[in-house]
Length: 477
Image 1 (cartoon, helix red, strand yellow):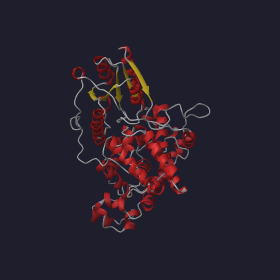
Image 2 (spheres, helix red, strand yellow):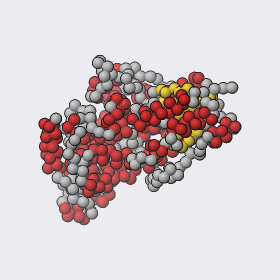
Image 3 (tube, one colour):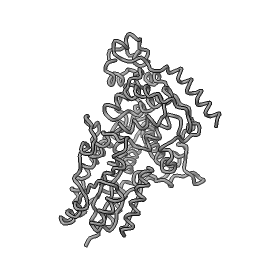
Image 4 (cartoon, one colour):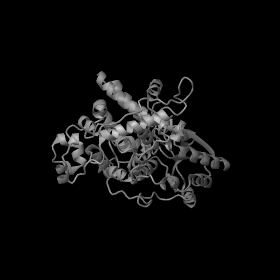
């Protein structure tokens, strides 16, 4: 009788280039996938409906992939430390394999699941898959984790990257009687997002699933990556990879992504193109830097890294926060970005920095308010990346140049010079002169005519005020 290994999918919703899944197949031909819909995650108040839609779509695609290679993806719902061992025991599985995560909740959850499986006499094998270099592989000379990006990048870039792994193939799944046992143990049909209590009235701007992620990577590497350094900062231009949701849920392997970028780099005929590719590779490194930071400094999930922000006197004006959330600040680039987020569940990265700076430096509102709002809306919401980006913008995180304040007008003039992005998301301002649009110097009568609000704060005044508070906090430390 062939040994059964259950592979517990989490942030690796694919059968290609999957470290733990490959290891399972090397041990046995009978490999069955499992995914647990965890109330510990789904019942939190920071879960975006768009993100759940992407998850369910990716699971549907993964079910199909398993079926194509001769096996199944089993869906269970409940606490993982009960659902996973319960199913493994009822199916007499030899082992459960899975890929590890860096987030505090995930690490605690995994400890509980491992303990429960071991108590049942079931082997457990964890692997690292979502990072090119797992935690503890990129350390300082003193053996400490990095807290500054640039030296991390130098070390990380110099290390050899693993090649993509093969796609799962030639496997067998459960017998009909075993499928009945699985149902008796709690497996269910894949629910819809609506079944889980999440409503998303818009189409997803990114198709979920493994094949769609691979096609997006190929399209990006075919053209946009070669101009990435110049184009990535312009929100009206499709100059980014838009792979963030795929990387969040692991519908594509990071080794596959790196290999594709390296291939473009090696085929490039100009230093300029190679520099553009490397700029994107550096963004992949930022992703890993933030994940390493979350692994070694789990306190980042709930608080700031830098001392001056540990008791920062945020004003936290609820009305100003609501205006920011709704895209009604009177600053066109800020409002356009927030409308984009609210409408499609995604925001251009340059705009994420602009609105985060505005919330923390102009409105003097705790970055954690904005971080949570993003997670409530973003299709690609990821704790490590979102937290890292917000702390970078708020100046509370790991950053050797901590006091960074974005001017909304200069950001618009530089990165949306024709006002294309603003006009797309603020159609009420379409008819305005471009200079008024990008500088934000819109006369009150024009604002009234367009039914567009006056600025809720004065940027220069609030900039001075924030700097004064910051200097006081530093002096007090």
